[in-house]
Each structure stands twice: as structure tokens, then as C-alpha cells.
Image 1 (cartoon, rainbow, N blue to C red):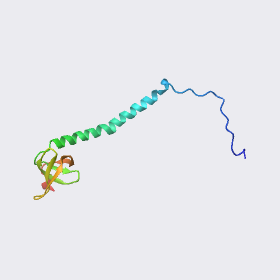
Image 2 (spheres, helix red, strand yellow):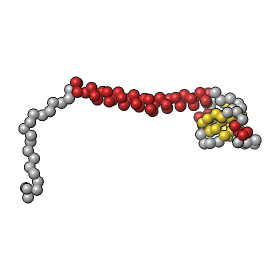
Image 3 (cartoon, helix red, strand yellow):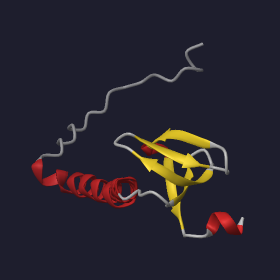
Image 4 (cartoon, rainbow, N blue to C red):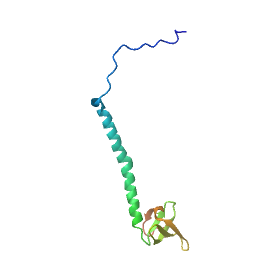
Length: 113
């Protein structure tokens, strides 16, 4: 049966030298490139969107027309520190957290709908 399983013999050649500090330059370039791509494609756009949303929330005023993250469109009736009251029809007002506001609409959008 030994003819089916070949014998493994150790190679008599000298072992390869481990890559020292001179051989690790490519790894550093690859790592730095990965960090730059991560910054440009993920972190920077996310920070920009967060800053725009913070400015939107901070600039809310009575009379602004907004859309919530749930898709409800309405007019801002009252603004407090944490909450905002939105009028969605003549007799219906909803109290929501400011963070639920997704976008501000141009004036007159609700009447056009």
C-alpha cells in the first residue's frame, strides 16, 4: 500500500530569510491606502450628512414645511428643545422628536399636494 501514499522528505535547501524592515514597505503603503479609501468613501460623507441634519434640526422654525423619517409631511406649529409639533391636517397635530425630521420642504409644497 505504500505505493499509493508518497513519502514526504524534507528539503535540504536553506530556509528563506524572513522579511525584515526593508521588505515591509509595501505593507505600509497598502495599509495607508486602505485608511485613505475608508476615510474618503465612508467616514467623510457620513460626517457631512450628520452635520447637515444637525443644521436642519437647529434651524427649525414655526411655519416650516417638513417631512419626517416615517414619511409624514406637515407644517411646524411649535418648536421646543427636544420636540416639535407638526400639523398634518387642519385638525391633526403630531408631537415628535426633532431627530425624526428628515428634510425641509420648500414653502408651498403642502398646498400643491
